[in-house]
Each structure stands twice: as C-alpha cells, then as structure tokens.
Image: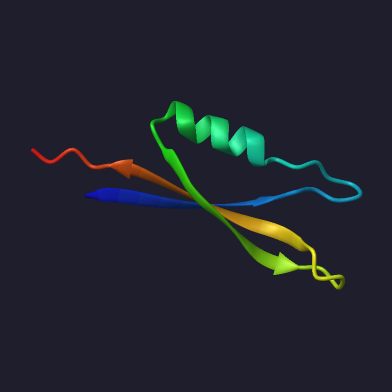
Length: 62
C-alpha cells in the first residue's frame, strides 16, 4: 500500500523563480518517490503556470 502527497509548485514568472527542483529534492531525501506532475492553472496564452507534484511512499505494514 502507498501513501500519496500532493505539493503545488510554480515554474516561475517575470518576478519569481521556479521552485520545482528544490521541492523534488527535499521530498526525495524524505523517501518520497516522484509519480507525476500535473498542470493546474494556465495563463492567457495557454501556458501552464502552476503545477501539482504527486509523490508516493510505501507504507510499511506491521
């Protein structure tokens, strides 16, 4: 069985930087595995602006 975690991130913009690399590395150190990245919101040109990163971790059954 797996536990799932959903984390929102952005690819950055004119005044902000992307933060997805840091989020993925941070969760990987905690034992989470990257499953998928889904776009959540789009700008007026149809380009995704915000994403949801989905992680999973196996639950150890006792």
